[in-house]
Image (cartoon, rainbow, N blue to C red; front, side, top):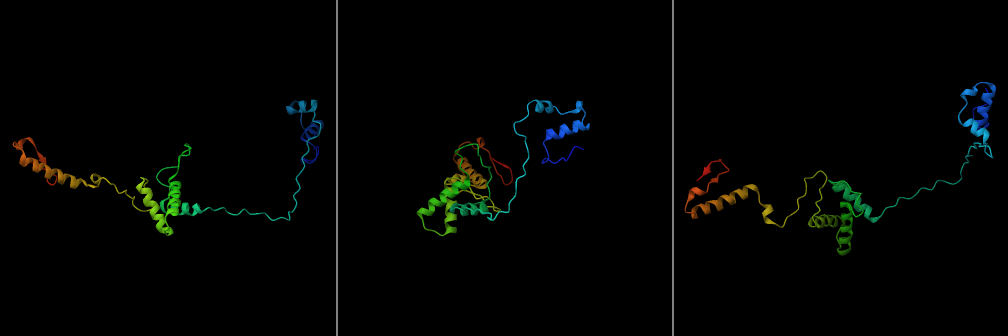
Length: 192
């Protein structure tokens, strides 16, 4: 063959040229770029220079971890509440995550009150709940917001009992009892 194939001995052009001279590559099989390179050679031959590796006397500097005060709050938030039911919406520039709202409220309450860390954490959760942000603990049933509307606290059975008592009161006061029929939910018979 026409020498070594290592890039440090000659260029690709000289190796192809020598292979064509020796007959290994036929003139019909020469690369497309060969004629252009021969007509317009570069001013300096492109040589590969292997970079020298020197044993460095400097030790690699390790970057210290950067922690902010709110990182501990975020870690505790994610530990207790997880990521949440919704994904983060990064398409909106004004989007504020639930965790960031929690951190903001936590720092606000921390500046106003002097509570222990665990009590302040619980107070922050209650404050967000009063603002309408429901936080769900990991592995626990969902936390329900205490509503101020007493109608929402009524159960279905209480509502049916109340309707029946109002219906029976109306039945006694009505002159024609055949106009209204009440349904008894316990035995599904109609009462006339």
